[in-house]
Amino acid sequence: MSAGRLILSCVFSLTTMSVLSPAVMAQDVAQPEVENSKYQFAGEINSNSVYVRSGPGEGYYPTIKLDKGAAVTVVGIKFEWLKILPPEGSFSYVAKAYVERTGDGSIGSVTKSDVNVRAGSSLNAMKGSLQTKLNQNDRVVILGEQDEYFKIQPPAGAYLYVNKDFVTPVKAIANNGTATPADSAQPQTSTTPPVTDSTPAANTGTAVVTDTPAPSTQPTDGTQAAAPTTQDSAGQQAQTQFEQLEARFAEAEKLPLDQQPIKELLAGYEPLANGNLLPESMRRIAAYRVAVLKVRAESQEQILALKKQQEEFEKKQQASRSEREELQQRIDNSKVKVYAAVGEVRSSSLQQGTEMLYRLTDPANGRTVVYLRSNDPKMTNWIGQFVGVKGDIQNDSQLGLNVISPTAIDPVDPSQVNDSVAAQILPPSLMPKAPSADTTTP
Image 1 (cartoon, rainbow, N blue to C red):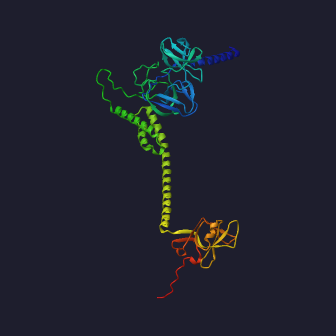
Image 2 (image 1 turned 45 degrees about the horizontal axis):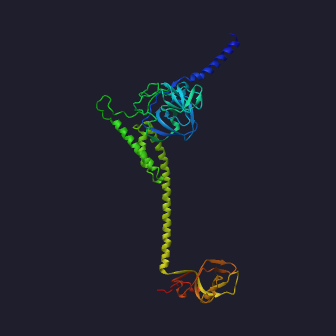
C-alpha cells in the first residue's frame, strides 16, 4: 500500500470513529435500580454549576447544571449519589412513533406498552439513558421535538442523580406518593434486576440500596407475624425520637435565639447522627441539624454574655441613681438650702456691657464678694437685703471678681448661714471659724 493510500485510510478510520462515537455513546443504558427511601428529604444545592446526571456515577452524562440555592427532592441514596426527582428545567425523550398528539398538541397519548423514556439533557444531545417505561394510553406533556423524539415533561418514575457532597439537607419529608417507597409492593419499571446490599462494592453502576426499610410485620403465609427484633424496636424508637426532635426544632426556630433550647436539641440529635439506627436520609438531616445548632450555640453564648454585661451596667446605673436620690432626699429632709453665693445686695458704680451690674457684699464691712449681672427691674427691690443667689458662677478677668447671672434670688437670714443655708461663695465675716488650738498645759 502506498504512503498516500495509508494516510487516506487512517484519515477515513479516524473520521469513521468520530462519526460513530456519538452513536456508540447513545446506545441504550438502563439506569441501575436504586430503590426509593421510605424516608426522604428536601435538600438545597450548596455550590454553583453542579451537574445533575442521568445515572448514579460520573460515567453518566449530565442533564442540567444547578446553582447554589436550587431546591431538590431526594428520594433515594446509592453510595455517593442521591436519587432525586427531576428538578425544574429537566425533560425526557420518548419516540414520536409511539405517541399521538391530542387536543392542542401539548398533550400526547402513548399508543403501545413498554415504551422507553430516556433522560434528556440541556447540555448535550445524549439520550441513551433509560429512565422508565410508559404503557398504552399513558398521557405525557409535550415540551418540544428533537429529531425522532418528543421532549416531554419527566413522567412519574423518571429520576436523576446528583453527588451528595453538593446537597445540604433541609428537612425530612413524608413520602407523598410521587416516589415509590422501598417497601412498596408495586413492581419497579427498571430493566435491571435489583441487587441487595450484602457485600460492599465499588461504584461501577451496580445498584446497592443503602437506605434499607424496616422489615414488614405482615404475615406472608397466613400465620401470625413474628414479634419485632430488638434492633427493629430500637430503630423505631430512634425514628420516633427523630420526628419529635424535628417538631421541637421547628418550634425553637420561632423563638429568639437566646431563648432557643439549643443544648437540649444538640443532646438529642448528636447520638442519632453518630449512630446507625436511622436510615441514611434521616442521619444526614440529623448531622446537618447538629452543624447548624453548634453555630447557633456559639451565637447564643455571645448574646447571653452581652445581655449579662448590659444587666450589670443597668444595675450600676440604678445604684448611682438611687445614691443621688438618697442624697437629694437627705438634703430635702435637712431643709438645707444651697446657693451659689450669699450676701447683701448693693448697687455698683462700675458698669460694663449691656447688663446692669450689682454687688453682693459682706454685711460686716460692705466689701464686694461677687458681682451680679441682670437687667431684671426687680433687682432694685433686693438692694439692701441679705439674699441667697442661684446661678452659674463665671470669672470676669476685667472685673477681677466672679460674676453671677441670677436664676433665682431668695431672702436669707444671715444667722442661718452654715446651718440651714449653704453657699459656694460666702462673705468672709460669715465663713466658719476654725477652732483655736488649746495651749494650756496640764
